[in-house]
Image (cartoon, rainbow, N blue to C red; front, side):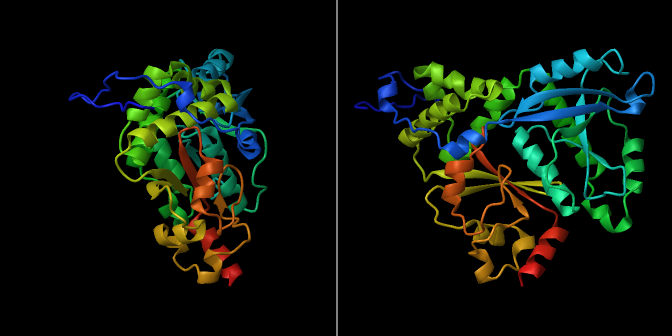
Length: 355
């Protein structure tokens, strides 16, 4: 490009010269990345308490791993299949049985603001902790057509052993997650939510959302693909759009570039940013930011063995894996890397075994 795009006082771009596809260096997707765009079968069960005849009702459908469970297509599929048997008017939220409490009927609201592969890894990490095969298809969820009630939540909590009560969220946190799900449901197709998440990732990485404005203005085809590829499970289209937004961001950034990392630890979620050119390894990163990994020794931090308490895109990465490699190969459709950890109990067991 020969002419720079300058910002006006309102923070929008002056149209001095458009960006074209010739300005973008498109990269062929890695085969490993293409495998991450597979689909997951989902089995939803309407609970007896919400069924008109008191019997559980079920429906099955397929959802892409790099998509969102709340997408309008899937909620419509569920509603049309079960609305005649449920007490409510439409799909409100999902929950899953927590394997951290295998002897209790504990169901937690599914944080469907994250891509499907994150939900799969969260459930797989709990199953592995409980000695159950990490993932069994289909993904089994409970469907809810009515709002959650505080008394039901408190009754659920009382069924959990006292020593594990600290792993449960409070009613307030439960409500916050439920309200988040409702906001997503109101977005219907999920386009607005996905664009919102992309803007958060771009701010974390470049300090601004100008890259998204650039491709939506100058490369509308790829700007649209950044959103639509998630709905229609199109890996190649997403990778092209990702190249556009990353290189546009590099053109306009005035600070060091960063990557967004989401760490899911039990029922808690932590958002961190890491310098793009960092040579830090995964083991050292976890040791510095996650208290449960603080006791990792120097040899363990750089081990070349898979760490079975860490999940990234369905895999157990080596603790010696450079963070840059995770960003290159395992960036999700929301332009973040999601790292899912087992509970602190299983992490402590892993560390003892390694010693």
